[in-house]
Image (cartoon, rainbow, N blue to C red; front, side):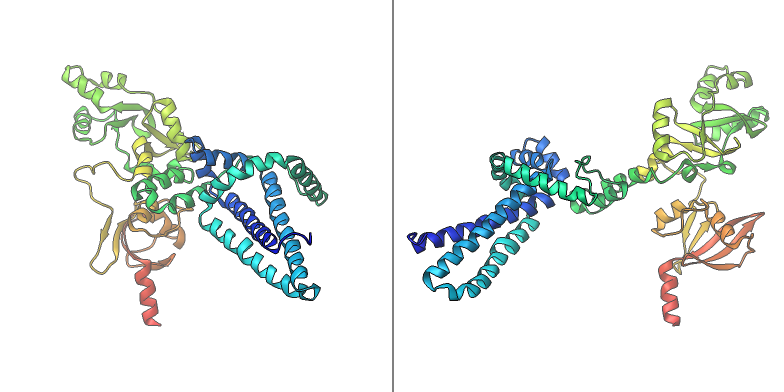
Length: 428
């Protein structure tokens, strides 16, 4: 090649350096692009995304053609640079030329294009896909041979090279994607999406109305008392029982009783005839499963029972939906909130308040893997029924028992973790 002009060799060298850079950028762009976004754009008709998606179905072939082109460019550039050095300065300058060329290739063919591709993976991946697709068809026999030899080399070390199922996100990975979406997803929508994911973590026991708070109708009670319950109840559906909640005979839609009353036919017998068969839910049922069960059975309320069949509480469709969208029902007249903020920054909290509600309302981190209520959490920790005035440090929160009733804590004062931590630091 001594007859080739020096200018031509310089042009070829420059082309090979940029050719190597193209394959370097293509490698990083295709390997780092968001494949779920690629799938979405491909389904929307984006041609570059469709080509990239097709290439990524067999990443071993993509890497084969990319690395083949990259190494060809680097080796060919080295040969041309050597030829130019010998032609101009003689063989004595080869070591210097090798060092300079290594630096040039490292900067122009490797670091710069790969950094560009990492910063803008989509444009790089989609644009390079137009060139790699036909190039892969042309070089397919050579790429197939390279992949065959490489795959068998991996198999010698016990590494499987069988194509895997399409990428799937775990629940926690999907949660991270939602939380990192930033302004792409409004905060309210992020909260609902995270609420849906949390349905897999919670059971009906976490959101049910506990047995002692269930309002119902005892058919053996005085008729005037039954009428008073029907007239004053703020719920649309009430459990009907005989004697106690251990003998539930069904669920009554208050509107049915109202229709009977307007027609002048409301009696103890017609009231029982209007009762629907009770719907029971095992205590460990996951909320996501129960939501589907409510849809399948066309029910909106169910009675939660334990492994012995004893009634534990009541759960409604609305309570599950509130786990997704937050509180949306109005509070019944005459009821009070369970959490009261005090001037000193502490909170007076009803002992029957659920830990989940406390954490959600105040942004705290009380443990959720044990008892469901504040009363249960404190008594489990102390292994005793504390007397009023007892104080304890629970998971970093200072708790003081304010009032008890019988065997349960009625009211407790809790100092937020941040205030307790700041107080300890000041004392130190």
